[in-house]
Image (cartoon, rainbow, N blue to C red; front, side):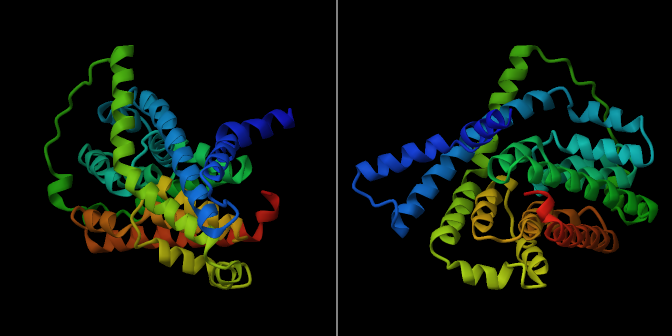
Length: 334
């Protein structure tokens, strides 16, 4: 059973066979794949192709599932629950909406406009860009099942706790009036046929790949640079476990960046290969995906500064705590 799992993880998810083929192809072209240039090129081609293949398959499956949960139906489902249960359900629904932080905000506005509790909408806003089924599979291909599952679990916990805190603080008055008082139109979404769901899923694959392709290229390029050109001792001195501020640095560096989680995975892979702590890597990934300057600017248009600062503080504080806890107990995940 163990050998079957290793085969699945290494050959199906990680596609090690693809790396071998690319290496042989580059060697046949006369390129030394043991050199920095050759190794960087192999890393770049392999990771780009691997992520695009996995991404296309995963987005198709996720979008097909998502076709059963249009915004109108999601609002109705969430409206049936209250308290922490509603926050948990909202966070779980965020896992089947593969959006970046900016793309999640229109749905956040729609949920708020529909009269859902503010804390519930914030649980969705945190969960949607941070955790999804695609991220789980891609993380498994790099870090293994334990770390990937742990990432998803702590991401959901952060979303539930963050939304619950905002709900307890009763900050509804800090939502801009044009959002909370806008008229809503409840339109029942017609049931789709199997063919229509397939078409929708294919369209979402095309849309998502076009949207994140540049971020993947940039992420893989940075990953190749870290992997082959920056000495390990330099990376370790900045983000290694001996530096007590490594998680803080990773969070601060990641927050201003704007990328989909699929663009951060090659960077995370390269940092992991350099021996950087799991908690530091996850803190970087979470800060990039859950918070970004563009999403904060968009959110500022619909909520007042006090609520915006509260949201940012809760997410950053949660990410830092998660990072240090993961670093302290990473031996349990190896």
